Amino acid sequence: MNKYDVVIVGGGTAGCAAAYTAGKLGLKTLLIEKNIHLGGTITSGLVIPVMKSGNNQINTEFKNALIDECHRLGGQTTYMGNPAWFNPEITKIALDNLMKRANVELFFDTNILGIKIEDNKIKRIKITKEILSAYNDELDIPQKELSVSVGARYVIDATGNCVVGKICNCNFLEKPDEFQPVTLRFMMGGIDLKVFSDWLQDYDKDRNVTTVEHIDGYIHLSTAYTWDKDKKWALAPLFKDAVKKGILNKYDTNYFQIFTVPGMPDTIAFNCPRIIDYRNSLEVKSISKALMLARQNIYRYLQFCRIYFPGFENAYISNIADMLGVRVSRRIKGKYIYTIDDLTSGKTFEHPVVVSNYPVDVHSNKRGKSTLKTTLKDYQLPIESLMSDDIDNLFVAGRCLSADFMAQGALRVQGSCFSMGEGVSKYIANLLA
Ligand SMILES: Cc1cc2nc3c(=O)[nH]c(=O)nc-3n(C[C@H](O)[C@H](O)[C@H](O)COP(=O)(O)OP(=O)(O)OC[C@H]3O[C@@H](n4cnc5c(N)ncnc54)[C@H](O)[C@@H]3O)c2cc1C
Image 1 (spheres, helix red, strand yellow):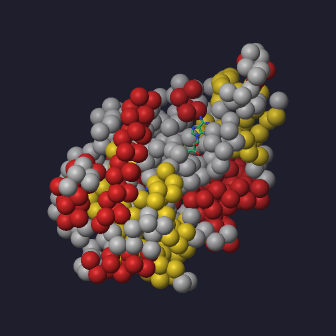
Image 2 (tube, helix red, strand yellow; image 1 turned 135 degrees about the vertical axis):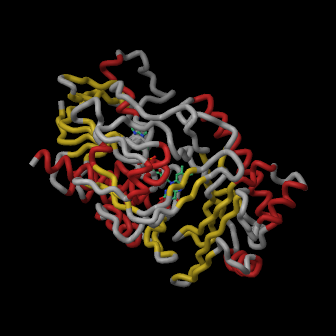
Image 3 (spheres, protein in one colour; image 1 turned 90 degrees about the horizontal axis):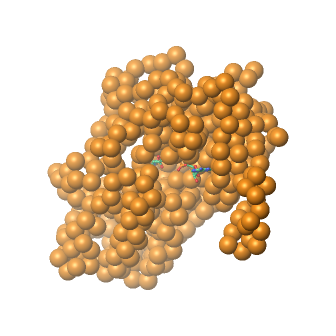
């Protein structure tokens, strides 16, 4: 049986940062990913860009390495002072390159079949040994011949949904009434960005939420619309008209946000549709319903954009995310439960892994009920919020951290997830030194 210093389950936002850092620090590192590429929410979920989280962030070496590698490959730009504006397809290649450079061993398309715990520590993880498909004519082989075990001194659960913690019967913090809508992101190609950006700048003269920049000969832009009250969005009359004419339904207007994508000069990425008619991010039935509703909504957006936005006459759907965008689901009970009071008071800790000023950003399924609250000072997250309270050698990184619902709403962004992954691996390297 192969034994690793650290096994990271989940090669997404936080997991890649953890694996890269562990490998760079000389730890024997295995990264297990259920998909066939890295990046998680960034690539499978098409969630771009990485939001800015202030000037005092710590544990940023991975983020900087990713910026450099995406830049080298032509999939990065610096927009409105934010250098973490990525192309999700190029990011898949960049992440492969970074893992190779850090000597991380990678298992793609791999599922966890079981976990062996001894003396309150994970000893072995049983994983799939070969890829099974409908075309495999040996499906009657005994289960043990289809699996292999890997040994781990430390395990990092970076699965977003805290899958390892669940298999280990850990305690969790989530409550049924704590809920944020999910979003299935997508991209449209075939857009004349010059025509669209000229129209948009003229149409949204107040530039409430619209920005446009010309960078290295390419047009980049961003704009948004929501149905939340007290907001005067320039695009609002277009949405209202489309609802009146039956091109959109009224729920389609709850959130609409678009960004250009570096290296894709005729493409726009959509941070919508946000699905409000659904409740549980962990339940198959609920998620399946959300996915079906979302794809219908995406098709309506295509008709809407073609009719109302100059430059979109020949637009087409070029990509629909193959992962539902989940803002919050399972959160582990850690050695420290980080609270919204810790965040708003800017409480400091002995071993911080994250420093950020990203706002508390909690989406609601009700009109006017979303929260976007800027913090007055930087806040810190301690390493103890990434340590399982139940299993001695289990850490988490990413959105499944040990925090209350409102605090998670600020810490879930990619910049903080990168810092968590990097911070955990540095901590483990110190334990092993
Ligand atoms: C719609 C939406 C919009 C957002 N917008 C922004 C934004 O603009 N900017 C920003 O900074 N943040 C944004 N966020 C927040 C941020 O993108 C996520 O919270 C963050 O990326 C989560 O990172 P993670 O590492 O916890 O999970 P992920 O990046 O999702 O990684 C989890 C990984 O684990 C893998 N996995 C899951 N289960 C298993 C298993 N059993 N075995 C092996 N692998 C497994 C998955 O395939 C995936 O690769 C947004 C989130 C959403 C949902």
